[in-house]
Length: 120
Image (cartoon, rainbow, N blue to C red):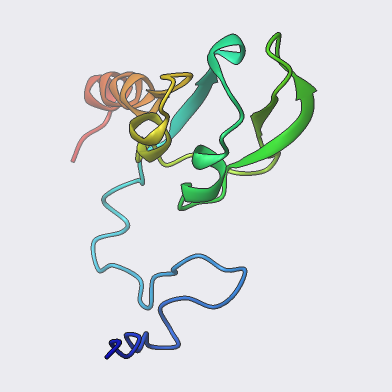
């Protein structure tokens, strides 16, 4: 008496693709998506691959590099943008990866420049 598998709509997930927005948000011109910088502590990593597998934006991949323990460590793919969801940070069993939000620093600089000389 097994349960039938749940039916997933075709637009939710296609093989090899991540979930995409089905429409552009109405206020997208007012807000920028957050951005993050990925930091890895290679000597803590045991190569489990959770961060690579569960990254919603597919920012990470397994590299050919080895750490001192002999495991392949993840690396950031070129031409990808981390959105600072911090899922990799939460899922890592060895606390070997963390995310630094970079939009906060840049946003403060932009706000400071905009207030001085611009009129609304």
